Length: 175
Image 1 (tube, rainbow, N blue to C red):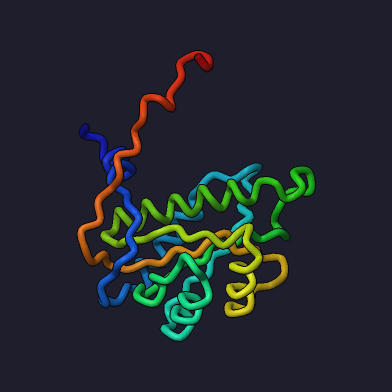
Image 2 (image 1 turned 120 degrees about the horizontal axis):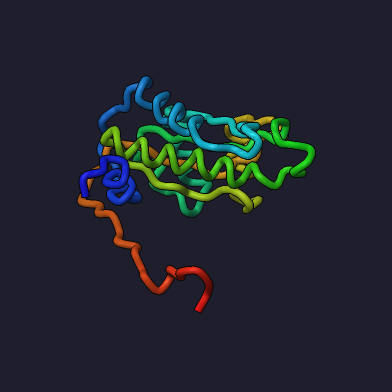
């Protein structure tokens, strides 16, 4: 395969171990810019992003969140939030999760493309995960944290998973 975008997609992996190398602020902003390039229903862009780099905050969130312990090792994180003030009254808040998920995937791919490692750790819809994030980051009531993406330079030999399974593909109709 000689398609750079497809190579990037197929080489993306979840990274949970990070080196102590600092991450340039411009690189973190580039990841968020990639997130904001995602499609969104009616182009409402109902997202907000919080970049976290302070060690104390990273450690607190790493302790508070059961599946995000790697925050204690990562040098940065991006919290992807749905901003309910930006959702369509027609869709009644239904599409922000899909929109923010598309933004998250773009961030994960941009991390891979720039030599960083990242992993999606869920917050929404778990109240016990969302609450410490909202309190720690002083999020307004209209912001719902979908996830936290720990980010850093990979340490270790993480490999992409081959998730291709022809049993999950159907042509024309289910058979």
